[in-house]
Image (cartoon, rainbow, N blue to C red):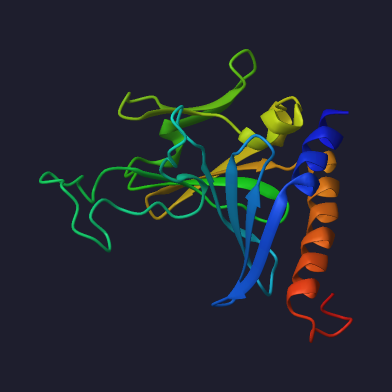
Length: 203
């Protein structure tokens, strides 16, 4: 029921779609005023970016909050007011999904693989990463599971380590796979309305 509820809210949202730079870009405006923007790889269909924006109590638009995608480093692309920059050697946490898994990468972790512990915290509905040498600790949730109101399963969690990067994967539940497939069909229909010269195969 919860899965259907979130999918219905996505389908009911006001959507704007376009193709740009090899990416399928979709903007959602929900009934409660929240905005979500997503970008998909045009060829593979993989989600590259998801970000959210909400209005303040006074109605002003807030900053976009990144959920999926490569974080923009401080000062990248513009000159901000920051005088102190974050070190490039600090761990960088980002989410980059695949078709079948939610996936996170933590770069700049120089410790050997056997130092890391990655587990599901059921009561807190989150994943916890820690090292036995107590040099790193990270706690994060999976918003998708919260939106679909699905439980976290220990058996769905795995991780690997290579080139100073910890890669954490959580296999997508079949309910989410089905819902994402249904949503993609609707997004293609939206693009077909925008690009009326598309072939039937593309639609």
